[in-house]
Length: 209
Length: 68
Length: 256
Image (cartoon, rainbow over all chains, first blue to last red; front, side):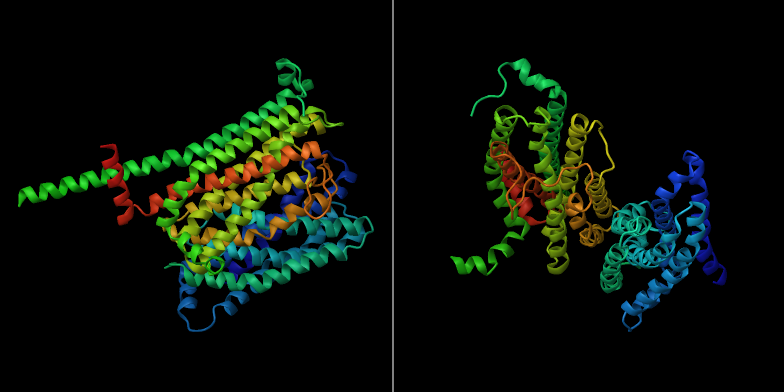
């Protein structure tokens, strides 16, 4: 158990940093061009890393039967699911936000961008966990490694990548970066209100077992 | 209300833009044709399957009666 | 008359597969006739009679396919999501089949919009493909459609797949306003919307009239294809019922 949680936290960060190290190899060796594309690269890495960890939310519980236990227990299903999602965010999203300055440093992001970047990743990764959990619960019975999960989840991530990169871009160019951050907050509020209920309804209404 | 093109060649060429316009038109007509034909074909295929199933069903029923 | 209309009884009756099958059978010839006439008139008017654009010349005539198909790509997503929601709430089988049909047709409309847009981009922007906000978000819309289509077909249990597809379609609606507004929020290459309901359109009246004809024609064609797809779905799912068997018997008698 302890080993799997350690893996769940460390794997996305390692993936992120290794992925970023490939970018300078693929692009012309020009530092100035890196800083202008840095926000986008940071966000793509966060998105891919969170996509990678998405399967973990329900698959283990589905395979070892604890999801079934949760379903037949008389308590509300929404609360434990919300708890699982918060835990997933704390274990993957927050560490990614804390590790993101390393990426930003490597990509020579201007100093003004650091705090907006960390805040946007903290808020955005929570949305990614919540929105992703809907697709993860829809596809949980198909087993691991399916391609349905990524193709259904990536379109849902679109608003976050737009406003996440906009937050960092606005901060770098001296505009008011609280506006895109507030839009991300709106998406997060909506997802927090809706997604746990939807996931609980999906598990309740489908012949999973 | 009058035609913009005086000859057939002008209509096809459209000032050099004809390739683009006519490709767009023909591809959309093709897609429209597929959108109409696909359901019609599957509709008739399903109908044929149902009728086949009904025929074999009635034949096996008749055979069962003969055996009796 | 009005009271019976408002009591939604007609809607309940329409949601019965048998009633829809027979009603749409009567409507299809009319829909085919009107939509093909409108599309032919609109294309002839737009391609041959409408004046060329001052800046783009004759290549602007692609608008007569591009704009209506984009309209239907976006509206079709709403039709699909609403049908999915109706199916989830009232558990009507027909609305799930509607959703499945709308997903296929919407995906083709989105592809058409992207394709004609790419062709139009060549003479006016100098390149076939641009990562502009509107183009990219339409591509995302295509992925949404494909995701819903894949979700519906991914499960052995068909009802489960349809339900999951409906949920995915509903969750995906968060993107549609973003796609719709993308040209106004990001001032990139794509020109802002020329047709507006609330304020004056920025397009000349001689060009607008054939465009409106084409839009109405596209909507009717959409209704036609929905009817055709839905009839095939109904027949497939209801083949064990007695009314379908009666239908086949009557057909065989008619053909001898």
